[in-house]
Image 1 (cartoon, rainbow, N blue to C red):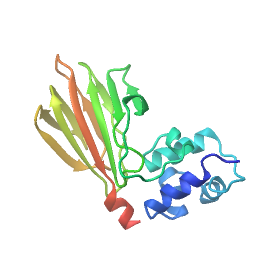
Image 2 (cartoon, rainbow, N blue to C red):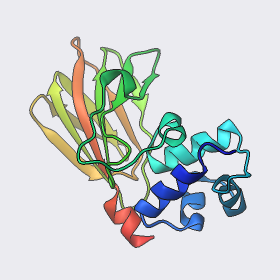
Image 3 (cartoon, one colour):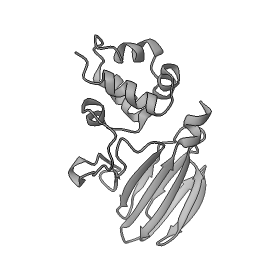
Image 4 (cartoon, rainbow, N blue to C red):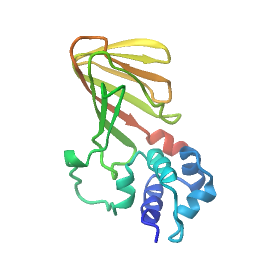
Length: 185
């Protein structure tokens, strides 16, 4: 039995995506996705990761049954984190799986951090709110300095990098809105 079949189909339906749209977002053939959504499918972990990334969720989110409830508490231990640039860049996903159209990440950047951002789908928007320190974002090769208390807003599909040239750590929150992406597909 395929442990991700029902969850992928449910999340895809929640976002009003067709199989072809999700397959395109994940970079997998539609037939592969259709097979994944069938109970008889046996997807590779690489394919499951691609689908999870396209949906903005963790692999654990796909394996566990996620039902919409009145409220969803996300414990720190359950937040997916990625570490890049030899651990100088840490991004922890704060938003739960059942929060449609939005991805919220807590970001920490140590001095000397230079991390290449992953462009989001066409039509998405990113808000980067600096809580502590001063971050430098390169957005489409243009430098934007973001001091504590300030926010920068940009088209999420643009190439962007997160940099800390200062001597103090940077703490920030990044919010990515994907509602327009899902509506236009």
